[in-house]
Length: 52
Image 1 (cartoon, rainbow, N blue to C red):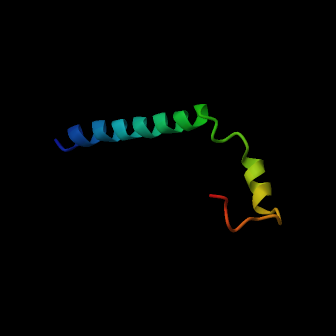
Image 2: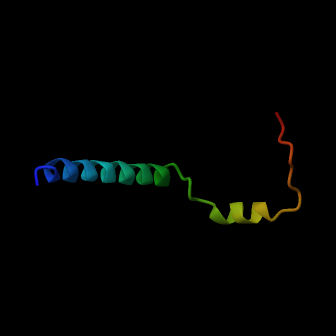
């Protein structure tokens, strides 16, 4: 039972890190245009060789 005294705080810390990472991605506007990416992949003007 003493292992729970270690596992519970570690799981709470990892959960908080995951939540902070998710909030960071929301604030940096990474989810703003999900429809644009979906339409872009269907575009026939796909360039296989990106410009350097």
